[in-house]
Structure formats: C-alpha cells, structure tokens
Image (cartoon, rainbow, N blue to C red; front, side, top):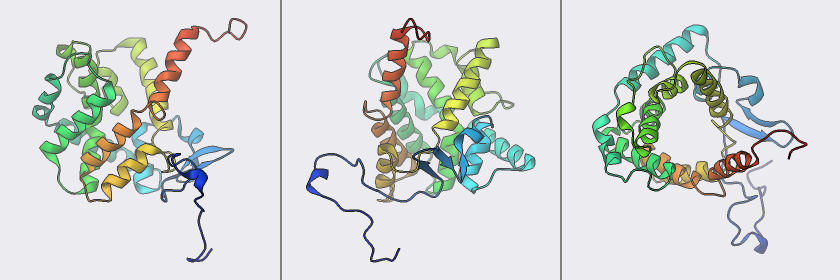
Length: 251
C-alpha cells in the first residue's frame, strides 16, 4: 500500500448512519479478528483471561508481559498511587441525590472531579493515577447511590485493583472470591477493543484537542453510557435475569 492508496470510500449510504463500518484511526495495542476475536499486542484475549489484571495493563502499556519482578514493582506503584486519592474532590458526589441518574453519569462526574484536583499534564502519570484510583471511585459511587457511604472500607495495600474494589464494597468470604473471579475476567475482556468503538473514538477526539486525560476519559464514559454501546451490556444482563435459568428446555 502506498500513501496515495484509498483506505475507504464514503457513499451516500453512509450519511446519517454514525461511524459503523468507517475506520476512525489506528490502534497499536489490540485488534479484532473476525474469527478469533480480540487480540492484545498479538495475544488472543482468551490466553490472557486467567492473568492478574495488573499484568494485562502492563502488557498494554509496555507491549510485553511483565517478569515476576516487573509485575511486583508495577503492582506496588499502582498501590502507592491509589493511596494518594484526593478524596476531598469527591465530595461533589455527595451532593447528588441518592439513586439519581445512571451510575455512568456519576462516574463521569467523579472523573472530572479528580481531574480538577490533580491533573498533572503528563498523560502517563495521569493515566496511571486514574487506573489506581478508579476502584475506590467506583466503590464510593456504588455505596453512595445505595445510601450507605459509611460502609466504605479503607483499601488494603496487599490487594490488587479488582480485589480492592470488592473489599471496599464490604464483600467477604466465598462471595468475594466469586466476585473477584468474575470481575477480573470481565475487566480483562473489556480492557481494549481495537480502537474503533464509540467510546474510544470519543476519548481520542477530545484528547486530540489537547484536553486532559481526565476530560478525555470522562467523554469516553459518557459515550459508553449509551444503550447502543456500553449500556447494552446492562440490557443483556437484565434480559438474562428475566429469563432466570440456563436450562435450554425451560428457555
């Protein structure tokens, strides 16, 4: 392919149809094979599903899986960043009416509040801070919306990102183990998706104007909240819950 070759052609049929089928950029961290599904830096995502979430984040950041030493150092760095959460900035969430809006609305507000308090202007630093602090932000949102903010547990330095989220919600024992397993699997499967979906496109478009990482991610979360994008997962779960069984005969 040369620089003069056409990448795609826009016809009248594409008008008023959104971005379906239109390339919107390149992605170096993942791609989606129509048969094999999503790959992260060349690894089929199924081969990564049993790893710790921090190791897959490291893979996406560094294009290689970490050694045992690198993994431990990266987890330690995220733990340290998570402990420096500017909790005062999150008081804005306490002004929202319990149970109002959608959790994704609260998440976007929380991300913007963190950005107002701590944006450094260094995209890597801000990104790592967000990765480390999102579990607590989401736990706070979950408990605030449920009217039980006092139930928030302090983070544990020995726990990873997913484990700390579950711990801060107050979940223990076998239920905690199940939640950790399910959420880690879900998290890894959704970490990256070829760069062509609506939320990624929205975040990249905002970032292209030199907006902060926080503003860019908040815009991505607002895009993700739509029923034709991320909220479709919620609709799918609600559908499964209405069915109430996995027995094919009953279905």
